[in-house]
Image (cartoon, rainbow, N blue to C red; front, side, top):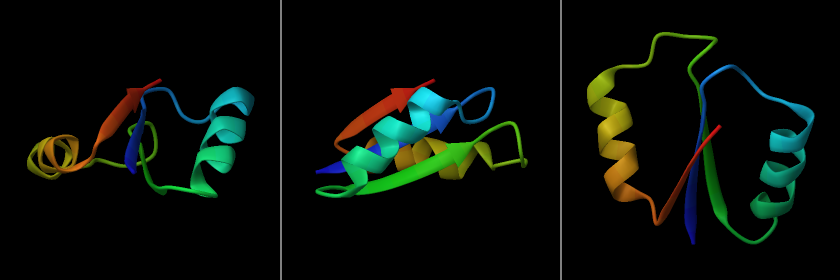
Length: 56
């Protein structure tokens, strides 16, 4: 399964733990909105190309 995590305020201890566990058996991508300017187009493309999207 492809899982996308969107971190609005940066990573937390809980998000790091969950991402780590999910990464073992799934394809996981993390977008940290607090660190860089990500293009709106690429975020929307990712949202539609992943099976599950989790926003923190």
